[in-house]
Amino acid sequence: MRSACLFGAFAVVLAGGCAESNPVAERAATAAAEPWLALMDGEEYERCWDAAAPLFRDTESREVWVTKAAGYRDPLGAFKSREPNVTSVIRNPWGAPPGLYATVVYDSYWQNGTIFEMVYMQQQADGNWLVAGYNVRQQR
Image (cartoon, rainbow, N blue to C red; front, side, top):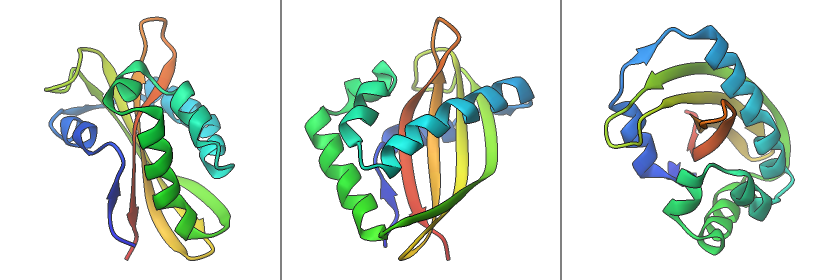
């Protein structure tokens, strides 16, 4: 499986920021990512799009997202398990709307291989965290 960037522009944006130590935000972002990933694991890609941050939904249509998500996840086979690897928090990354963002990286185990899942989270004005991007990459 090749590296798959379902929301690559956002990944580049987050890479351009400086991570900060913020354990409270890290825990909140990770906790908010998990129900969204459960939707992904259940192949409920349309519901994932609906539950994502406006930044995510403004990037591509629901139909494009569903096609991409299925194309990257379906070849992995059955889901086995997932473990958080690392979470980093970034404030006001260049190229993105001002605010607090987090990258949550998981080691994810599937019937046909092991991948890194990167879930890019954005804190909303009401304090809730929503998924703003998603990326998968095969582990070597």
